Length: 134
Image (tube, rainbow, N blue to C red; front, side, top):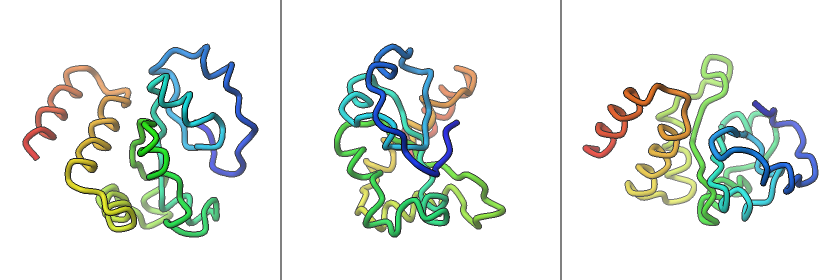
């Protein structure tokens, strides 16, 4: 998985050649959002980590909502909960508060997390069924 230090220039041609489900990135600057959206490639984003590392100075500057609104499949994650004091629930709450995410948006982001995971198909089906009840 990519690190959050610096974004290289966009590599659109390499991205177009990758299988859809193969890439799960942290960096939004690696590729053009339109190509990510077109290919359905998910970005695994860890807001607290990004803020802690100084990648973005604030949630106002964080691109997760801009990417999501542009059609990029985003998932909310945690990098190192012990080191950063972050929890998955806390990450979702941070985004909901910063961007006014509704329950429908939270559910869609959680769905992306499940669908983009490397979990066995049976586990994904159970998680998606539970999410549908939320």
